[in-house]
Image (cartoon, rainbow, N blue to C red; front, side, top):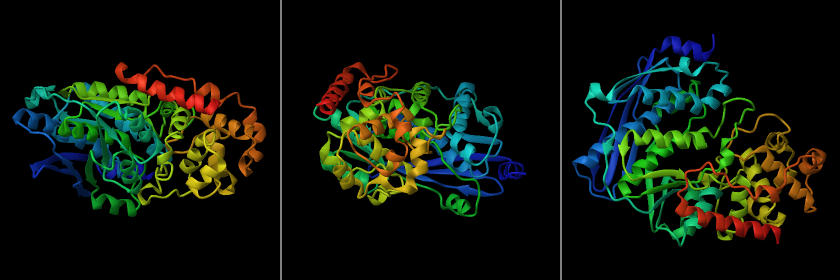
Length: 455
């Protein structure tokens, strides 16, 4: 019997008991109360700065948003033993909202299940027990009349949020947002606005979960971007910001495991963005608008714009292993992908200046290279672009006369691909939620980057 089946037999349920929240000295403090009966309790925490007055109506809305953040936080703790039932004791949801959460659990844990060899249907994974709004006496959606304005832009320290920041800069009122921090995040914000208008939320994980991970209980990828969606909504609510401008691109829609639903970037996809917008509208009626500003673009288009933001080249870090320490690890698929996707727009010397070495000359990265370019079926489990974008960038690399160990070894395969950078730089995905008033800034940046590439 697998670990998954053994644990599900041993632990019948996961319980979301409740949460405490307190606003004091300009800070919202939240402590959640989760439990897997017979195994452990868990008490993760959050802190959010409060930058507006909160009357009774606002506190009611805030309490609901905090409850919802707790729902997405449960996923990290549920996955330890994956009980068949999640019991929610502290809020209410309709039948459709329960189905929404079952979908997020299933798709958000797609990579986790794939890599742990778990085969189960969406309906079989879990049931969710929760009171309905009528049973609890909740009048959802709660009304939120606050006059929101300006942008909240989540920053992760990589190239994508830099493009959003620099595209909106000079046109709109921007507040940067991040959860916890890290060297790369701090450095990017420092370059952008010297941290003059920054919003930092703080999240702590429960040490009991970390201890169980060390003991070998089930572990793996969870939908962090979904967590960030709910957290950024609370941040926008507490800072009075109208637009939450994510930096997720259309390339995130491509699945990681070919011909399956498994997508490392599911909660960055257009599907999740739509689902989240629809879900929030049933929770709180407000003027906060969540969308991805870069959804019309592909990774290679974003790279072309980012390459023109030269002041960020020394400080950005897209490597998940190294970004908190402010380094590129130079030994992971994400580092290799960024090296490749920037190669049509930066010289070899510039790239070596960023990474410290020539990544396409590293034999240790050959497997990652094969997966990125589509020689092997599945992509790496990282936030990377499509197979066609990688192939197009490598064709441009070879076409410019540059050589490397990996491109020479797979030269024939790369040159046989129909993809080209020039063609990809003319794309614009119309399935997006970017307000029309802000699309022009992005189109202008894309045209400038395209002209710089073709010059």
